[in-house]
Image (cartoon, one colour):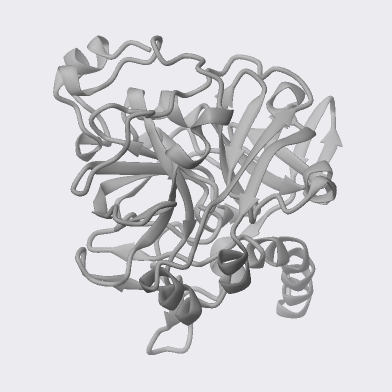
Length: 342
């Protein structure tokens, strides 16, 4: 393709994808090492959790094709003018937010991802957007059974202070420091029960400072990623806690899990800056020390747990009893993997 045609194609594709990402809430960043892993790199336990994670798409990017659906995407590196060598730059982006199955037909996400009944009606909830083999392509053609629509908003909350500062990093940090930001969540009933995937349990007992955590979602609209190597930094706020998770825009709505119990502790909703200009003028993904920066904000599950059905809590085994934490991703030993039962 010549450069002119390539540029026109990229502009057209970006017009579809990038506005969605721009509305996906506060940006995020990398703390210390980049701990994000592709689906195929993760342990069997993490992949099973990831199977219950959903990507959110505008309806215009999910087109019926040959009895299934085709997802409209654009190359990550091209869309954001990334510098050579940036992680995942060769992969596609397209999803505008993330979510998690917490009931037979219920999705949990961020309140700023689904703003009203109209936006819910326009959203498509797609399971299985991942890369399942080393060297393989992203799964952008999906069967009809993995695509769902919104039946109704069960419960949604978006604090006015938080809503007013979404997308403005300085204001976000200021509000966090002043303890102004409040709840940010949405629970969505889908058009039908989800087929072949299990609802994931939430921790109804509360989280503590220092707890090891991990997140599963779609940073920048990429195929699903698992990111660990993080902990709870500050749990003193009423509606949320701060972490050092490696997350980005598009991760908004992602479930944050306790690495000891494998239960959901909250929803990723806000954070710092994603990208900065590199020396060559192209973009690089912002990095800071593991203990630097203000941290990523996670709505506490206690804010919304009363609206979530108690489904699957006894079926999902915690990892603590077998000594497994997310820091052992990408894979435990084969013997250890055999012990993990869901």
